[in-house]
Length: 424
Image (cartoon, rainbow, N blue to C red; front, side, top):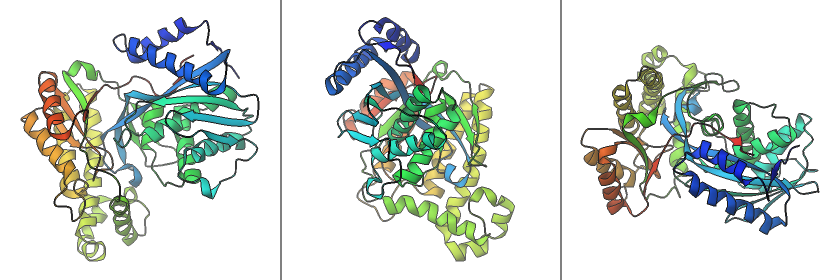
């Protein structure tokens, strides 16, 4: 256990870490942010001599839309928005985490069983992560933490996964001698989300946040995914990465999201398989007449998207590795069109008056004028789109998107070089 940062004397050491993590231009703003974080830790829990400071980034899906839950391939990147925490010993057997703007979570380490009434809460995530470590003999001691986040909620940037990776990093570093690597920490977050929180999510979000930079992940074996970093200097392309909030609300769209996996399960069931990765394309296309009758045309089209987007991920990675950014952008466009036409996660079924994501994509294409690329981002139906915008168009693009969609709707991001980590 190592709370090595002296709150009173070691801030110069932290400032050096911030420059390395966020870049020289953003460092002054981050210094103020971390000073506030440490002040809030003491205001919430009392005077602190020693602390530890952690960060875990949000993520953006770049390739592979709705492929991870079918054990497919994805391309993702961590972004320069993160959840940060200042941590100090509590002196008792409880984990207390005060996330800015939310009620405090308190988890008694003597009770790490699943609590049904706690599902869908951050306390369930904390308890589940602690339980994973405790089951492997980790002697966790109580601690207090204050967290704050600038990861945009509802943006498809996965603030929940960043929180999971953050908590896993805290326990791994302070109490488990950092025995878990980034891939294992992502799996721990997924375990807590699936088993304790009660959400049967894939592993993409946690993996991108934990590993950092740009990564391609093959989920053929979901218990041991193949993760490869994609070293590419995105800053040198002359494009900005923008996440644009369409203004559509995710509320009441649970059935739309569930229908995607449900219909793909119907396709797989015909072959007595559990996920589409286990069904060859040859088998799939040979059975089209039967699949259309059994599962319906939308299910078939959605399966076609998954096959094609898996192939596109491989091609995107190859394009980036050979430095062919134009080929990469063409594949981003193809993926976006496939999501719209085949996966059909742009407009919720039956919506006519409200088609915010489609409207945002149409405006984006108009402003780009054939340059760059755009696509639906994340789960779809609501939330955000992603755009790669040439720098000479960026000011006009941002201004016009916000004129139509509202102030603050267009967020200009960068790819963060590292994933979840301890700073000091």
